[in-house]
Image 1 (tube, rainbow, N blue to C red):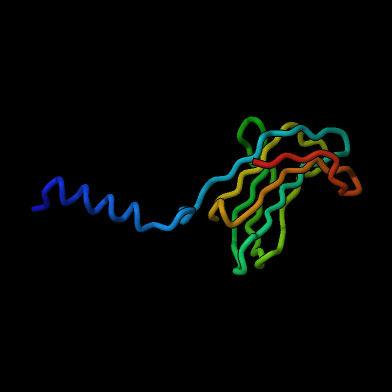
Image 2 (image 1 turned 90 degrees about the horizontal axis):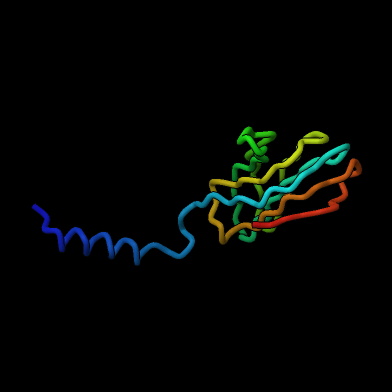
Amino acid sequence: MFHRATIAGLVFTFAIAMPHGAIAATIITPAIPASGTNKLACSVTNTTDEPIEPTIEIVGTAGAVLNSGSPTIQGGGSLGVATGPAPGLGSCRVTGVRKSNVRVALCVADSATNCIAAVTP
């Protein structure tokens, strides 16, 4: 039978042994609106040398997923997903990766895919 002190010591040891940023995080950008012919585009940049496979979602104000994808992003590369025209207010949610290994941006893109406004978490 384990004593409370032994269990507490084991939990403390495991918490210290875990590398900083080792736990996959949910990364969410602030919401930004897109109307008319503009669309929302969420991009993820891999800051490591190894491939990653994040889940990228553009989420509307009611929580509905407007578009999503799970691309393989090579080390140093960037990929993302976009909505169709006039999605309204939305944010970008990225899961399945360490926060320290990516950079995330949500952009309002015009019909020629030029970024005219952007937010980051």
